[in-house]
Image (tube, rainbow, N blue to C red; front, top):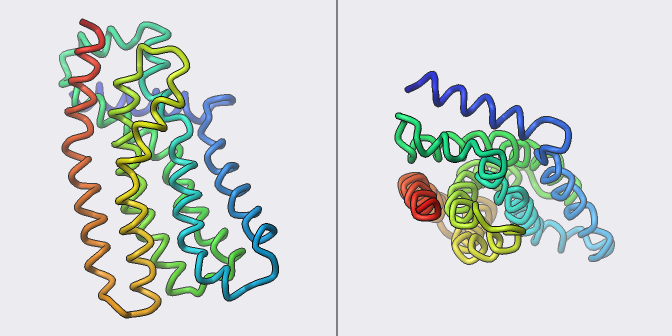
Length: 223
């Protein structure tokens, strides 16, 4: 079983990282969004520092949406989705493996880029460290929510907008608690651990729900 899951992980990473796979689109979008914000606001460094964490979170959230519909759509197009459904490996584990591959290819680069882009916004080191940690904890949940949306839309043509509509409402709590944890680390008005633990709890919830719900959606779509 472990060898089969490792093969799926390796295959999905190769598909995501190859030319046209879309792994770099999210980083480019993230970079473009964060670069444009200072031009829109103007030379108001205190304002940039105040809203910098929210800008980074919004940028990472929107960038994470790119390519979510391809998690299962490419398998449906080449027929490999039928093989995955017939595989002796539990479909929920296959879905979790595909989510891991997607996050490594698209979510992890956003987390790595966050400190660099945060410097462009003049964010203080404590806030920069906090927003990086919260993105590391929160972006996997975005991928897992998108896993459910991708499974629901796997057999539908041009499903990118549909997946985004399904994912965004569920991802709003991640944005709220992620920004709240960053503000708590800077202002010390509330403990950092309170919103951060809620953020981690949401990620753990979707870690359990996401693969199971995606597997059920895929089975229903093929019936």
